[in-house]
Length: 241
Image (spheres, rainbow, N blue to C red):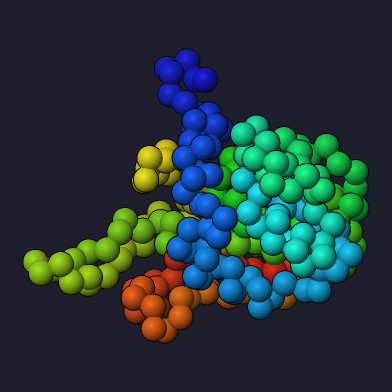
């Protein structure tokens, strides 16, 4: 806890853990269920017998999906309640209470590392990228599912007097900053960073970008037109050379 009694990002997650577990349920929220899971399904390689690290697994929902695809799953998260919940629902996989900046596992352990909406929660991406590089096998894959760097530096929609959505602004794009968010009883901190910075952490260390997509909901979905104008998410895949 900081000296002015402001909770740290980790303390916020600890406080919100049970609310988050209830919010996600077994199938995830709208964004995961409708937009991100289907897009990720299209780019995941064959995971049968592959060693996979779920980096920031939360309550373990997608770790269980990876396991169902034949992966040998190890998952980390710094929130003890998330890890306990994940172990309860999936006692066969390995769940470790750990921050992403320092992971107690040996070098070259994984064929695939997945970060599913977690780099936005991580304070020190420099240290985390070094851990990812260390843990990934040569020719291993890194898949990052995250908020669009454009969406994370906008201030909502500007509307006319009738409530019609006109446009969104982009500001402070090249800055690095934290954002305090609250919804549905949750209070968390996310981080904005420019795309060039995030990708550079890996491209500057002999990784190759193999995929970059901005997933959208189905065209018949109520939110399709809004997401088409300003997508909320990005998914990128990289290979360690």
